[in-house]
Length: 186
Image 1 (cartoon, rainbow, N blue to C red):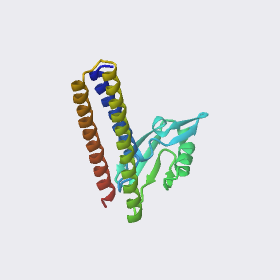
Image 2 (cartoon, one colour):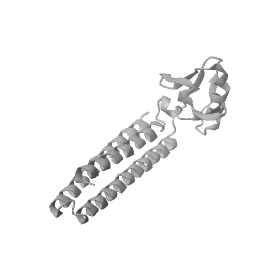
Image 3 (tube, rainbow, N blue to C red):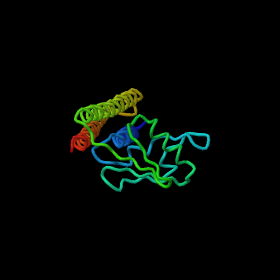
Image 4 (cartoon, helix red, strand yellow):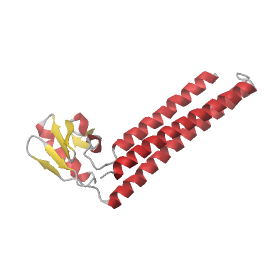
């Protein structure tokens, strides 16, 4: 593997870690209603489990309410059952056309738990990024052993990998801080 290929591979894998973190943070409740809270819930329908977002349109017309409008009215009860059994603590109201979920305000204790969860997710992402760095450094050392890279090229590449790692860890930190402040807002 050439030096450029190693760097490109490391960058792609670090990007994936950021994307996973984004998805995980979207599912963390803040004080406001957010379709991300329920759009990945799996619903047992048509003989298989499907995400709600494939079965219905989801919106948040008000800061304290999520509205789910199934594409097929026959899936209404299944969606409602999935929300109740999800453990999110939501009480869906079915009016025949829509399912409305009123989002209760977060208690201080719940907010602290959510902030702890955000920190945990951020740390997981940082660990993934550091694992990518380790793999890239191993590949760089192997390329030098195989006489593809000189010692100077190896050192330069390792510095670039370290800089990339710092940049991605900073992105993770910024994303986590942003989400923490959203969770702590009243």
